[in-house]
Amino acid sequence: MEEKVKKALDQIRGSLQADGGDVKLVSVGEDGVVKVKLVGACAGCPMSQMTLKQGIERYLKQQIPEVKEVVSVEVPASSAISSLTGRTRSTRQAVAPTV
Image 1 (spheres, rainbow, N blue to C red):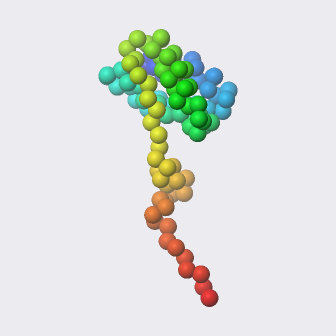
Image 2: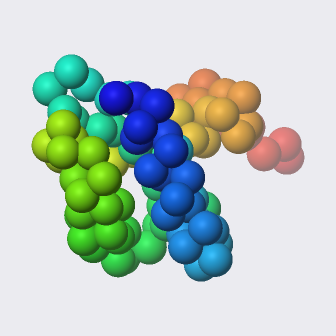
Image 3: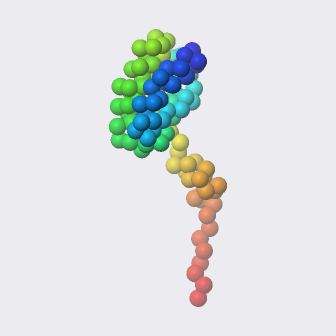
């Protein structure tokens, strides 16, 4: 089923990319739950849940009847900061001003 999901996502990817976003496949569970990560403009868009449910999920269910649900996974903010800076906020040390 994973290959079917990848192919179906490729079919709709162009629409997302036209608006500056994209979707990445995270996993396909045996229970029919597809986990995706919305990236680019989709990641911070207030309409992302509508895109996910009314766009991506609906299309996948039409193309692949075994798909029961599509859910978005998020990267925790601290992980995103860590991956960008190479360290977490908690590892930063305060620097006292010199007089």
